[in-house]
Image (cartoon, rainbow, N blue to C red; front, side, top):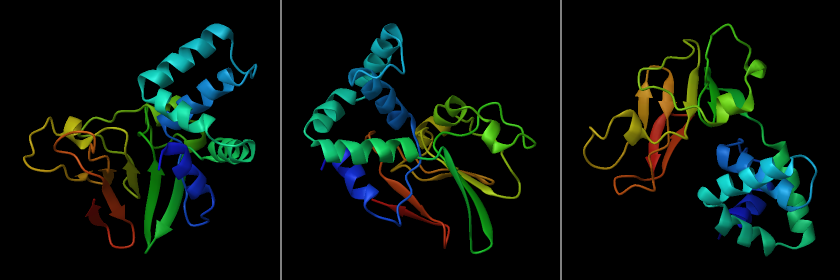
Length: 190
């Protein structure tokens, strides 16, 4: 199953909430341009396609082109509806789920005031602390980059106070898919 097939499956599941990530944002920008949308200028559109292709977009485009028009419509609606973050409470613990972090962070700054780029492309420092009253769960930055590869063996979810990085760098030899059960706060690895 390829990326857009997975998104089609996820779009049909009411219990799945997909957050906007940098790859989804790149796909939106590139597909907007490639479909003839006037959302971007030609130069900006070409840059968007190049960026997407440098990050695996060519394979994704081939997968997208295999979809029928109804499937493309579902995908497009699903992509555009993805939130940048999700706040929730589980077992009396508050969580902020987002893709990359919060660039230019200030605890007084309302979440809705962050630009998409500040959430999608942020690479937090290992000692970064966000809120004291909630857990901030993010990915985008492989834990191997936060630990400078100092950990031996397979990568583990990185915790620094209330900041939790679940990107265990599954593309690296020491990587794997890391998941966090919010009910129990237990790590799960695939």
